[in-house]
Image (cartoon, rainbow, N blue to C red; front, side):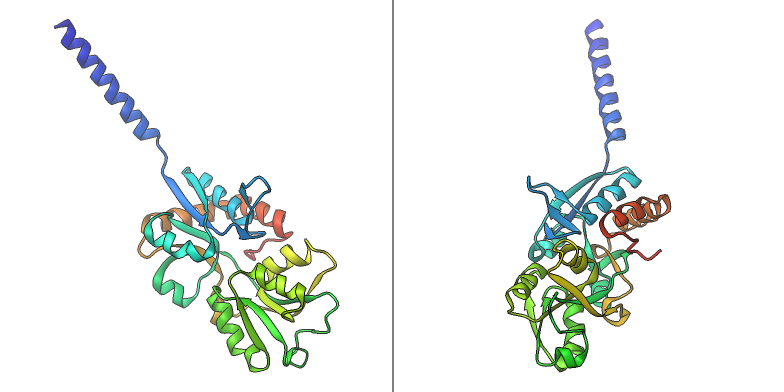
Amino acid sequence: MKMQRLLLTFAMAGALALATQAANAKDTLKVGMDPLFEPFSFQTPDGKLTGFDYEISNALCDAIDVTCDVQAIPYDGSMSALQSGQIDALINTYAMTKERLEKFTMVGPYIRPTFRLIVPVDSAIDGSETSLKGKTIGIEKGASATVSYTGDTFAKFATIQQYDQINDAVLDLSAGRVDAVFGDENQLFYAYVKKQEGQFKMVGESVRDPKYFGEGQGFMLRKGDDKWAGELKTALDAIVKSGKYDEISKKYFGRNILGN
C-alpha cells in the first residue's frame, strides 16, 4: 500500500508539473524577413538580424506575450516558406494590394509608404518626363506594385530594368548602368541618401497611389489564418497606442511612417 501511495503521489506530481508547463508555455510566432533589406531587415557584422521590421516583430510578440522566432529568409524563398508553414507571417513591407489580399490574409497597414526616384547626386534628372526621356530606371522585380506602376507611367518614355534586389539596382546606378532607381522612399532615402551621404539624392514627387500600392503595407499570413491575424491586429493596436511603434519608427526614420 505504501508503494502504491508513493507511486500515486509521484504520478500526481508529474501530472501537476506537466499541467503547469502547459499553462506557462507560450505560443511561438514564426516570422520571416529578408536579411538584405536595410533599414527594415538586415544583419549586423556578427550575423544577427536587426532593423525596423525586426524590432517591430519583437514588439508585437511582447504585446501579446508570445515567443518571437524571427528567421532570415531571402525574398525569393519567402512565399514558399510561408505556404509550407516554415513561418507564420511575413513582416517585411508587403503592400496590401488587391492581388495579395485575394491570395493571402493580411493585417495592417503598419506602414503607409511613399515611392520616389533616387539618382546620383550630380545627375541632371529632376523627375520630370523631359529629364527621364530615353533614360533607364531600375526597379525591384519582386515588387509587383512597383512593376505595374512604372509600366503604366515611366515606361511610356523610359526603359525599365528589373532587378532581383533593390540593392542590385542601386549598385548599377552607382556604376552608371541605369540612370535612376524607383522604389520605396523610406528604404531608398535612409539606406542610400542618408547612409551614403553625398552620393545620391531623391528627385521628383513622392508617390502614394492606392490604385497600385494599396492603402499601405501589412503583415502577410496564409489565407484563412484567423488565429494569428487576430493576435497581430491586437498587437499592432497595442504598440501604436503605447507609443512603442512611434519610438521604433523614429529611431530608424526620424518620423512615424504609419502616418498616425
